[in-house]
Image (cartoon, rainbow, N blue to C red; front, side, top):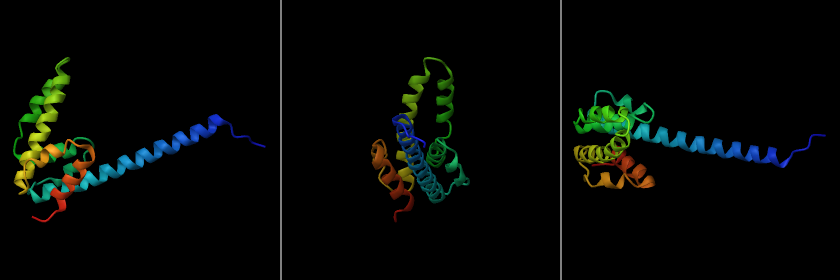
Length: 135
């Protein structure tokens, strides 16, 4: 007879938690990709499929639609220089708010919504409203 020990039960529970987190993150990725694709179409971007590039797609759509194409290149240069990388990440966060501000204004939404995208759950709602809301 096979006996399940406490360690095996904890490992199974840990695996279930990891799988649930993975499914949750995958759902957020699919939602944001569809939302940024819809935003890119509203902004008349020629390549809305860029939204599906993991972790950089939404930023690409935001800065392409905002019309500030050269800023990210300055940040990428800063990231590869040691000790400046942390400052570049802070600057990237600020530029992300600026890009979203200009993006929301281009879509006919209030620019201050970009500040709300700094709040974890609210950002998903704001992006969804910008993507599929009527204006």
